[in-house]
Length: 315
Image 1 (cartoon, helix red, strand yellow):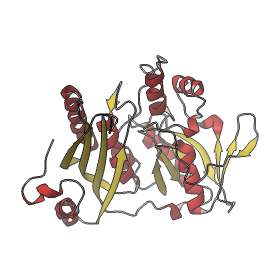
Image 2 (cartoon, helix red, strand yellow):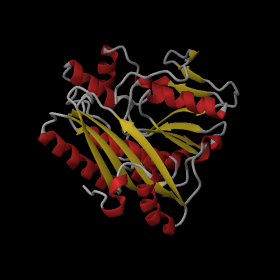
Image 3 (spheres, one colour):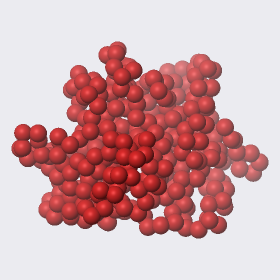
Image 4 (tube, helix red, strand yellow):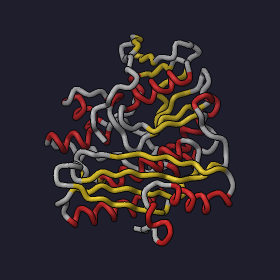
């Protein structure tokens, strides 16, 4: 792990010192600097095939990559609860290093604080990702009627893995978390995407609601087309959760012009993190700004997700 030193040591969190340091490196390469910050809590913070460190790195990198920027650096703030075993802290730092290497980013700065036992649910992580945009951004206003809605992988695997661990359901070895850095996946697709969003807390339902509201168009989704692993479906059903509402940590929702959908799907499925990519719906010209779901029995229903609702903590 790389730590900030010298004149930047006092600003190893997310202040102007780190930003200036990173932009110094980014801007000469062309384009404008893009920054995204996220705070990550996971219950449990250490799980079968990952931990909160991997979730935090992948989450911030994926948020940045979804805008069309190329991630270059990350900075982390880590809050550790007193009494956390040192072997878990070493696991966390190793996980951050591995995830950063997979994502192709360098750790530019780290700040760590210790709080009293019981105040931090063992460990919290805030991650800021820095990148550079050299092409057009994927803003929501670019979404057009007729665009296809594509998800890059199965829904709800991350949530199902954590739920199985917490409730002792025994499916966690069969349904691993989908946590992965996806900047490379997006690079393989190239310019064939109008808009992209990460599927995280709140699940695909929240992504669709926000997009429909922001763009002022109605989205129609075929529930039978949603890719969901059998084990994940079983675990989520045991908790009364729908895959549409379940958190992911390695899935994107893409809005793709119809004439480019085949090429985009082929590129996604050729990548290890996109093998189960699927078209799940389309954007309609209806200006109601809502989400409609075509049920397996052929019925059409509108499902309202209240703006500002607080999703269940699954990340």
